[in-house]
Amino acid sequence: MKAVSRSLLVFHPDARLRARVQQAGGRDFDIQVVSSWEALGERLGEASPAAFVILDPYAGSGKKAELAPELRDLLRNFPSVGVLAALEIRPERSADLRTLGAWGVVGLIEEESDDAVAIARVLRDAKGRPLQSLLERALPAKISARARPILEAAAEIASGGGKAENLARRLHVSLRTLLRWCEREGLPPPRQVLAWMRILLATELLDNTGHSIERIAAACGYASDSGLRRAFYDFLGMGPKALRQAGAFTTASQMFGQALGEARNTPAQL
Image (cartoon, rainbow, N blue to C red):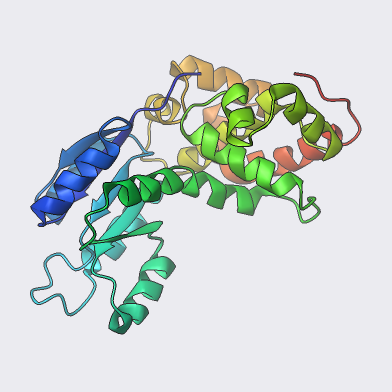
């Protein structure tokens, strides 16, 4: 697998905030500044399906009295994109903050803060959020409390194209210890867990017919679309066209559940 290059589009009038975002995410993201909702939509149409956006949720609303309806439309049109709202967080905006969460905004950035480290932390936490949300939908009802944090960490690592070694470091254990944990909790081996995380993300993107298989492969860390096609056949037994017809994410979720069941009765391997 290869590291996933993430596009980060910034749509915000505050030049100081844009500078802090550049400082916080310049090493991990391809950062581009846009100046309108229309330009943002156009750039997202060209960007990776796993792109991120930092924006002013009140942009275009004059005195910032109301959340921009363009934001709700953006979230509907680009469901795989991670959107973070940068605003002045005040008690009287509590209703707006709840609305942003309900719409699907994955994180908040304090507009007035000068702390680039805090912005970097929000970006890091948001990286795996879309896949972790998908994971919640895919997990069977019976999953141990100890298995859940392993899978959540795997979602975070897989989102960046990481490997089993990265997952072990994220959990502060050796790879061999992680293998024992997976075996004890009835999970597939670490490399298979990460492969399943990428499959879940790829099938969610596949259900959105606006994404080509080439763009989906790149967003999920595959070197080429042939690698993703091979993974689909290896794990799900069918190709992209058949998966779209069957309901790609639902099919992958069901088979992921079966794989978890099989893992409970199979010794894990590195």
